[in-house]
Image 1 (cartoon, helix red, strand yellow):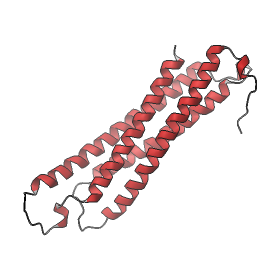
Image 2 (cartoon, rainbow, N blue to C red):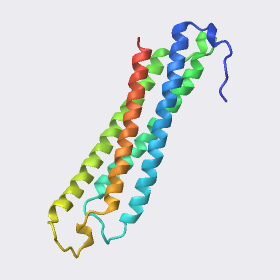
Image 3 (cartoon, helix red, strand yellow):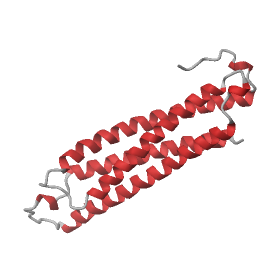
Image 4 (cartoon, rainbow, N blue to C red):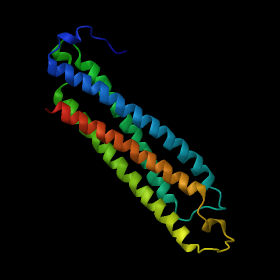
Length: 189
């Protein structure tokens, strides 16, 4: 249970501003990452289950899916950090300075969240690059007017769906990076 401190206006202006920034940008990061993460997860789960069928399956797609899953796992960790930023913002409003989180701990937490987002974005980019490369290779192998008997040689909508899930994950990590960098900039002034 979070305590509300009614005397937040009696806080020093700098402390009040840090608290306000942590709450605001923690919430922005949390909700933007959560929405994009849910969309990516649903898209990836839907397309991944269909890919276990051999017919029409893109050979070599496993690495792209693995990278997408790693990106989503790291995104869930990042969402937790964004949620935590908002909680720290509320804790800073405590009128007792000895009970407020330390500035160094808050900055360390933001940097950890930023690192998680960068690694998650890297994993998602690697997955997207692998998937786009596979789909492009399939498309280039097909010539105009070619009759194809093997469905795995055709670009299918599931391939594109996985690429879209990875792109949403990249956007979610980007939102986390922007909110973390904004918080670092505001807190370290």
